[in-house]
Amino acid sequence: MATSPKAPAARPAAELRVCLTLTDLQRQFASWMSSPVGARGYVAMQGMHSLLVEIAPGLAIQRIVDRALKQEPGLEPGILAVERQFGVLELHSRDAAALERARAAILDGLGAKADEQLKPQLLYSDIIEDITDQHAVLIDRTRQANMVLPGQSLLLMEVAPALYGGLMGNEAEKAAPDLSLIECSMIGASGRLYLAGSAASLRKAQAHVERALAGVEGR
Image (cartoon, rainbow, N blue to C red; front, top):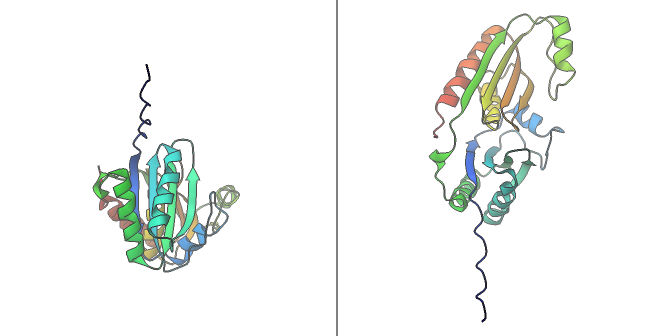
C-alpha cells in the first residue's frame, strides 16, 4: 500500500528580542561601528540611520537578513553575527523610509509586532571620577575606540538585551558630544558602554540614556 509523502516539518518560530531604529548616527558611534569590531560588514557613516535586530535562536538571523535585503536591496548590512545564543543584524542607510519598510518586512516575517520586543533592562550605571593612571592603562589595553586618560571621569553602563548597547552609545553622544567613546559592546548576553570626560557631561549623558531606555516599548 502506497504511503502519502510527509509534509515538510514546520520551521520553529524565532523569538524577537530587539527590533529598533537608531536615528542620525553620531560621529564617534558611527566610527566605532566602522572599526574592526566583530562581524563587521559595510561601513556606516555619520548622519545615517540604523536598524538593529536581535533574535533567538542565533542562526535564524540569516532568514532575517535575507528577507530585509530582498525587500530593500539598497540597504547596507553593517553587522551580521551568529553568537552562542542570539543572532544580531545591523542595517544602515540615509533613507529612513527604506529602513522602516525593511523593519516592517522583518516583523511580518516573524509574525510579530514592534512592541513584542524585549524592553531594555538597565543592569548597571555608575560614574567613576578622577581615574588613576594605572586604571586607565588597564582599560586602554582592550579598547576599540578612544583612550581614557588619567584624571578623566568614566561612565559605565550595562544593559540587556545586548543590542541596546547601540542605543546607549548613540544617544549618549547626542546628549554630550564632547565625551570620548571608549567602548560600546552590543553582541552577547549584555551590552556595555564606556564614556570618558568631565563628570558634569557624563551625568548629562547618563540621565539622557536612562530616559531613552525607559522610553522603549516592549514586553
